Image 1: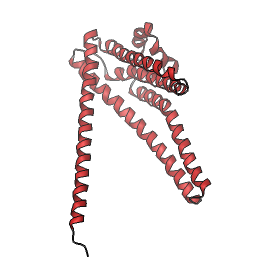
Image 2: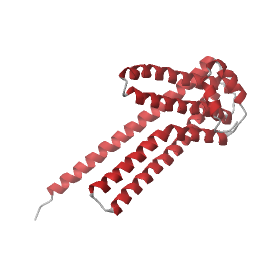
Image 3: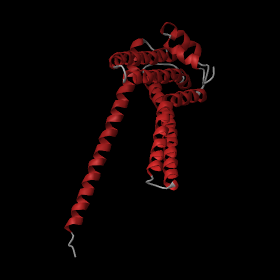
Image 4: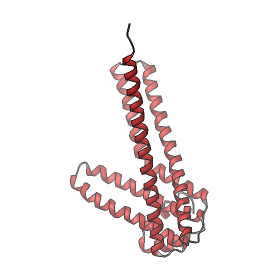
Length: 235
């Protein structure tokens, strides 16, 4: 089918034929194509942000040049560091997106198996990659409409409602993937999604707590060092 088959990405939104589409895709691809599709979708979703960052870097270096606050070397340095930073963020984002995609699907695969599901991990990734791609396209559309909302305030209120419906539908598409790939009943497919979300909620909560503790300890250490430095005899 090809990783860049965008017309097939859009078929995720055809709720009447979603079940049939997913069943026709099952077993038609492997992990390699799944990762390529997710990578392409991620790139599409971050293009606007990357362009904004590049424009910001351009104006920052131009401002330095026009105001004469630095020589050509400084202008080149700001531009070079800025572009390198944007590229670094882009690459890191792609890597993290792929890792989370594979890891999250691994968690779902284990949960579905524990609940009696019979299916392949590679097939799960292949089907979910279509949902992820459709999600990316939807995100671009919402970003475009959101920009219009800055000019027409009433659009923002409507957009919030539409976004809520959109993300509920994406959850529904994930649910259908589990039913198709693992042959789970509706209740067990929903339970798989709920358990997966709760597990990640716990993980994120623990990470936030750890980061807060590290931050507090770091501040306390710096404060203690500052106090010790102030207590040293002068002269």
